[in-house]
Image (cartoon, rainbow, N blue to C red; front, side):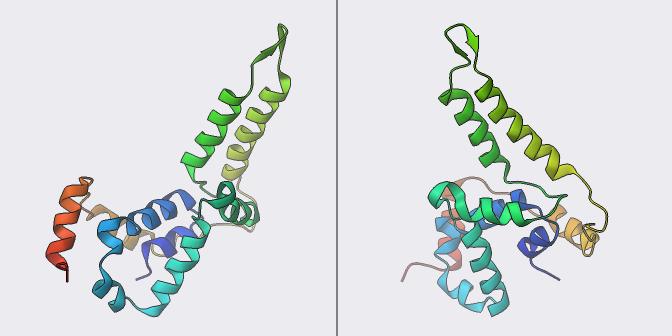
Length: 162
């Protein structure tokens, strides 16, 4: 079976890949040194590659460049798109001297076009379904814990502090 983040990369689903990387980077998971040491090298390498793409420095420059190179259909990291739209909206007046600020509307339209482009299906660029049934079964069995205190308790139970 492939790693979930590898499947996300193959499916061009950067939104889910970001979620997985951010989950693995939480303090309660990243502190598990003994567990990380047992991970096969290929998964550590893949994690490092995807971690570089999720680096927020320079306004997510690495992600934006990798995303531009990806052919559609692809799923963008939605929180970043929403942040971009919010900054466009909040950072630019809708009217200047009672005239419509078309520059602002063009920037919003460009972002909407980007989303529509992500949905386009270009011939010869199909996403393979590969392990989709296996991946679906894996995701279906996940138990979500979103309480940080519970996560830390489980983390310390698995690997107590030295």
